[in-house]
Image (tube, rainbow, N blue to C red; front, side, top):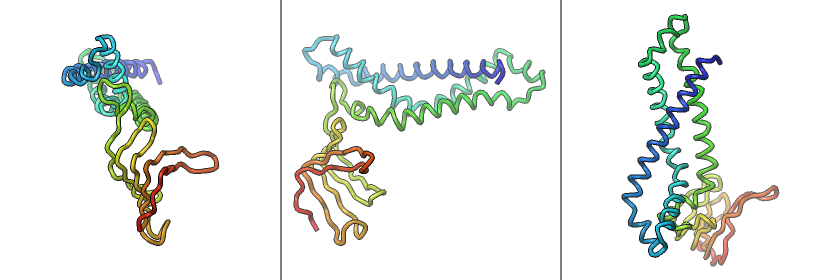
Length: 220
């Protein structure tokens, strides 16, 4: 990697950073003005400092999902802007005059795009799941509320999972139901109903799973 490659990568990083800040700032302004009533209603009588603190905390957590959504698009836009700036400043002609092929200019940008893709993957697989409860927090509140549960099918075990309410901060499902598959686990179709189900992470001696509390008699 030569000096010009590093120059292109720095320019790509600069354009990408500026584009991300610009688009995220626009998102914050539009979303904040659209939902300002929600922030005010949930912070009535607490003063403007508390209101702005709640808004700052809410949008700080929104950086991660916004990056996941806009990141791939900004890669393409940043690469196009870098090439446009090279053409505008007549920086391409000296490179071509030196006998360097045109496709060689794309190599540092491909490396930079791959680096951003790695960060996007880390954000999607590690960061977002780690703050999922905060992302579900309504505007103006400091903790997540109950979420409506959509039926989910566990392809690893064949178990269908239902529930009434989901609390991400405690990883708990209220009024949970687990339909056990036939014949992988039971001989007859069986549904386990419980007052609540708590997700327990696995350890060296056991896999991850759900701990049922207040189990009713199985339905056949």
